[in-house]
Image 1 (spheres, rainbow, N blue to C red):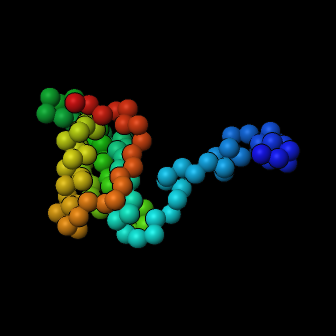
Image 2 (cartoon, helix red, strand yellow):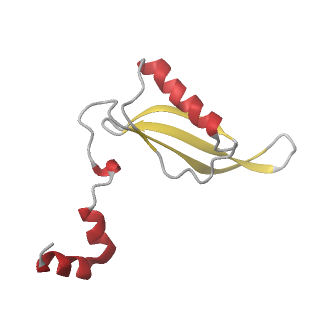
Length: 112
């Protein structure tokens, strides 16, 4: 790296480093089904569960990065392996194939 590159990194910090790194999610897929992304998010809409206690739903969604189409989703009470499996299975039933790549975060909230 030349002096200009080092100076650019020093001035712009983590933003410059992020610009230099080729993260898989930043590479635009060429075709539908090349890359899907899956994640769960908490919906802040409370409801009363079977025990009468307040609870929330988790939305797990699978998105085709090329088209931004939602390929599958589910509402669940906990983000777990079964909910991810259900969403991927739903997509395979609809499309007839698995994507070339499925990206996710580090799945810290996955419960067994």
